[in-house]
Length: 58
Image 1 (cartoon, helix red, strand yellow):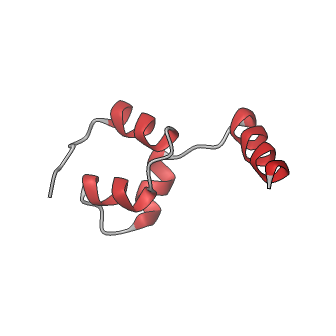
Image 2: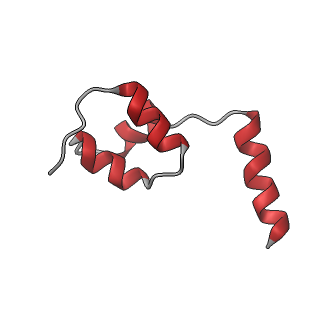
Image 3: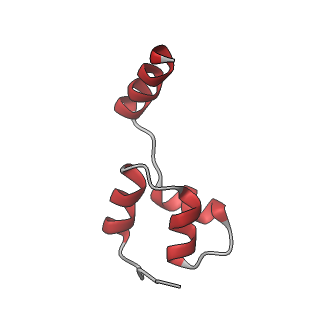
């Protein structure tokens, strides 16, 4: 297992870049996916617009 440690800045940007949340969970060594999702992933207005834009392409 590769452990990134407690580098929240790096992990936040890994999550923001679209890295699979389960991969982030593994890298951090968290037992619960909820910890990863609540700490490192955040949705803002731009994220919402991007996801809606993806839906309109399909």
